[in-house]
Image (cartoon, rainbow, N blue to C red; front, side, top):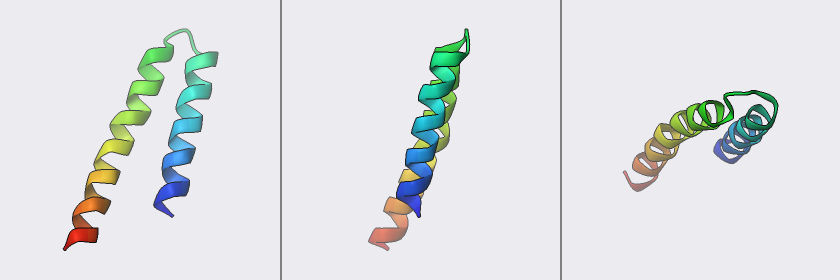
Length: 47
């Protein structure tokens, strides 16, 4: 489920980057959303 969410965030970030005139802002917000999710999943997996 995490993989699907990360792929969705990446795809929406790339599409938003290509469509919007502030493209880098859209992609950086998608990355800002994905990083805490990955960190949380990593902490839960090791605990």
